[in-house]
Length: 488
Image (tube, rainbow, N blue to C red; front, side):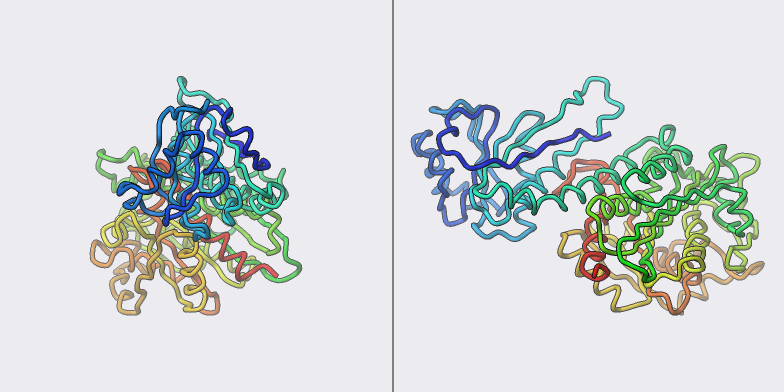
């Protein structure tokens, strides 16, 4: 679904620089110093690189940003981008530099003169992430493989370092593809089939159909999808790379389209509800990355796939449904459906796998966007240690996240006249009351995080490492959490 990019690491060769075609990128440190390869470009262009490095325009650039010099005299290339980057950049700076190069590259070829920069692999990673383009349904776009070459002093070493990053990038792309897909393509059947295909890379994949879900008592999940012609499903993905210990669990909301049901949404903006399976998309991308890089951990991913449609069989406001746990829920808003999906699969995951920890992801509430905008996901947790570990991982990957409150004070808002609880508490503290609802389906001894990703899963503009559209937010942070805390 993506526009693929091939990045090759080649030995630095000063003698070939003058003949390189396409576009070039060179690195200049904030103090204006240039490396061996950039010095060659500077000589060929009669000092253009050095002159720019001494300018006010260069001084004002942020680290990782760049400026293009078009059609430089003395070279065969069509342009050179000067990228400001310290000799020992941070990971975030290096990836930003790569993303800057990807934008400059466009759909053509690019040569990056990275020399001995210690973060060359991260530069390539940022380049790959930002070069993503979803063109599956564009008839005028090319599907030609994009290419980039990086001149480095140790190509074998850089390629080895970049290998796990390439696996992670593929996981991010898988998530973006899923979130970007229209709902007439990504039905529950199609989604499940794409996950089943990951058996080819070593995942164990099990698909639970409606009859089995009914037998298990997943009535709240089934209630969400009963108005749709697309069958509801639960898909279980297992990666067993860590021995005999209990797995860490990832749980995702997979509403492939959300009309709101009988409590129907306004028509304006409803087309964006193709992204309401974003939580399941992130879980799927993480599982793909773990398998591709051979993670030494046991992880289970469980996603609930449904479609929320209004027809004669749809659940109604006022209905009372019994969850798999046994609690009864008054449906007072059919547009608060994601928590009904998660309630059953959270309980199922704990009952079946007894995980050492559990994180759920969902495009759950508009309230989290009101609170945090599109910069950060909302983080709710019953465990300070797990929450702190995740926030550190998210910060390291520059994926915005902010802890939000849970409190017994919110429980009174969940009280129902006809059932054990109701599924929606209205506008006040909407993200927190949704998380408080979910907490009722988490056992006290299960370390748990709920990530409300409604504001970060799909953006209307570009972000640092992604074009507008699906971001793949969370794949990198969750992979880092698993690497840092759950791999031996």
